[in-house]
Amino acid sequence: MFALTCPYCNTVGDFEVKAQSREYRFDHCILECSRCGRQLYARVTYEWSKSRPYKRAEPVRVEVYPPVEPTPDSRVPAQVAGFYHEAVRAYNAGCYRASVLMCQQVLEGVCDSRLSPGKALRVRVEGLLKKGVIEKDVFGRLRQVGLLTSELSVGLKNVSAGDAELALRFTEELLYRVYVEKATPVPVRG
Image (cartoon, rainbow, N blue to C red):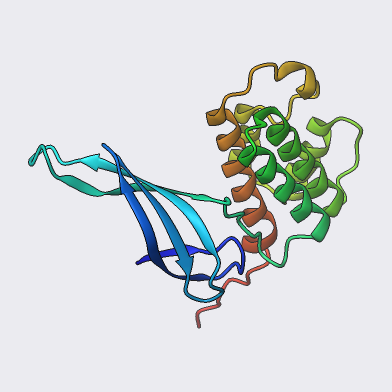
């Protein structure tokens, strides 16, 4: 039994293994959701135990097809969440450059929703920094990831899967910090 998020009914549930094939470091499984009854394919990657050379250690990663799309918090505006979903879909399809460009669209949407004026994205994000919507460390990481480059479509000739994954992870963290963390009231101790 696996506890995963079902890509069809979007609930975390148990999956029954219907078929399984083992390779050197991988298990290939056909799983059935206990809630909706639909089937999916999963590839489980294992690390080998160093103390026991012919025994597998715990699973390291589980890849699911169709891929599970993370759902942003309900406090994220619909348009921004739509851009984020598009970035995830592009990444899952192997279109890494498009994924990073959609992460930039998410950033544009955050600027729009927080009323940060300006033509260039860098100016708009600096406006978010001045308003206190984002912190200095977030701004620095945006520059580091490369999401503030105005010529992004020109500058991203060869985007690797790692680059796109980094941009996606940071975009997800940015959405959390802007829409969830800032909206959560701090408890007052008395």
